[in-house]
Length: 415
Image (cartoon, rainbow, N blue to C red):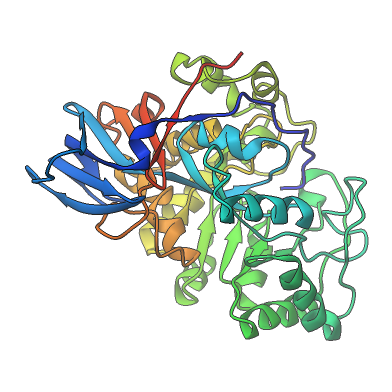
């Protein structure tokens, strides 16, 4: 969506407990492996990886035991659409989001976060993958925030433009297809030739091409150009069968961002989350302000259209990825993904399907082979919660423990 953001909140750094530095086993948990749930299972972690999953695992001496009867162990959550600066990745991890797929960030910030991750100094922050600078024309969406950003104005320049983004450290390519008119704004937008050339350039370099859209017609154009996925489901009109079929035929995914879409219709998505003590205790004053902040613009369409798009795409077999667009007004990194899960259920997904949209589905879509599921050999990015979120998806908010690469993150209430 065409939006403005404010700086992410400042937080006390998370504390890593010694247990995660060695070996531990979570006993008798309900395990949601990224797709389905199994009762009374053990998960053994060693060296930051999942060593074994089973019943009554024999682990030997020196392994820390965690009794999880009545609790559910899930993969660490993945938010497929964020924006980040400051301490936003720390905010995300405090709520069990162990990986963020950032859809626009200054390359300098991206480089700093990647360096910290490579040096083992980011244990208190969600892992970050990013598009870096987006692909947009002069006076296009993304140029209105007062920052100097590169722009693309000719189709023949697309290969060099994409090369420059990859040289800056972009993990995939984010393309803006937005004229703003559906939200009372006006932006220059890419021509079909520029769009197609950029998608081809990304694919020619082995990178995903994700296209920002806010209308169904732009979603159709993006998929026709060969995009791997759309960022934001459309809400301007009820979904058309041929558009849904096009996404399925091209094996494209859809990142939902129902949280920010709801805010554009006048209801800050974070308002209900602020009333939930399972989340509110860990939100700083700045985060609470941001989550209750109204969106100044209003967009054409309805939440009914957005819900219908999610349901029809999902039922057709299009991968649905949970994303929030945090920290847009009405949202905050980390906490808002729990609200997005609830909105996905309201759209007609089962709780387990919504959980897959925030774990295994984004990992598969973005080719993150080492996370998003609970299985031997994968990263021990884990979230332990009270209750059963496969029945009541809001149980993800009742967090017992968070582990990033096998290191436990000790949550502290916000100051």
